[in-house]
Image: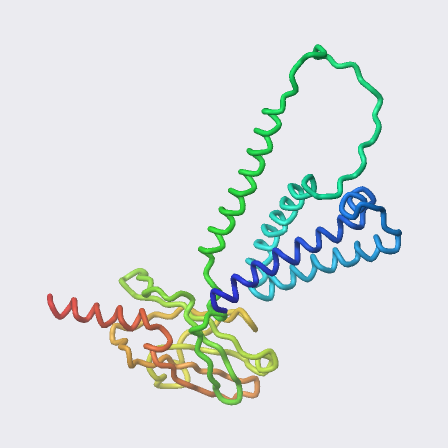
Amino acid sequence: MSISLQTGAHLGVLAVSGAGFFALALATERHAEHLLGRLPAPRWRMLARTAGWLLLAVSLAWAIEALGTGIGIALWLGWLSIAALAWVFTFPLWPWQPPARAHPLRKSKAPPDAPVAVKGVRTRRCIAVSLLALSVVGFALALARVEVQPLKRPDVMQGTVGPWPFTFAEADRRVPEIMEMDVPMKEYHLRFCEVCDSEIRQAYLKVHKPRSARAVGMAFMGQSWTRRVEIPLPSTTEANSELWLTVVGKDGAVHQTALRMHHASPATAVWFDEQRRIHALH
């Protein structure tokens, strides 16, 4: 998913959540009279309540579809809080205010000529608005640092292995992670179509063409949308090296396809070239 589409998803979730809270407010007698200047019929308040919960459900589904289950739910709760706070500060400024209710007079503890603490009220309001603005800014900065899921980035690779279409991507676009004994490791994600996935027993990945059926590489873990694998990268890896994907069907059929390293992991290919130049200088 591109950055613009991701931003549109965030703004859409915020807008739909705000509309949902507005509908729920219309479903209550107090806020409906406040917002409309009159009290709507019970049937209309029931429709507003139903629409409000449906809009909140739509915003949740939108967040999960665009950002994934874990991140989507967390960010939905964040936008939900911001939408609710926005209405809290908007209601007092609404053009139609409810009529003031008559209250019995109470004896004031302060003398009759005591000044009204208008300055203190304004200060509290300014602090509340500042906190709301800071929460929005902080949440926006946090969103800017959230990376798009690997299989939803625009640079994913798509192809077919045997009869099955797939989507393939590295977990991150950085250079390999150096593990124990100076072995560079790289994580990759793989996704098949929903129908295809039920026909697949296992998938494997390795650098360079497998020499035998027993040396097809590391097995992908997980099922359906969560297949992932971390493989060691040999020192002979080059830009033209190939990542070999081996897929075994439930019928025992074996299918293979090759992916160029400079397409699958551009930063990794450049890193290996730099390492060879460094070793050549020494």
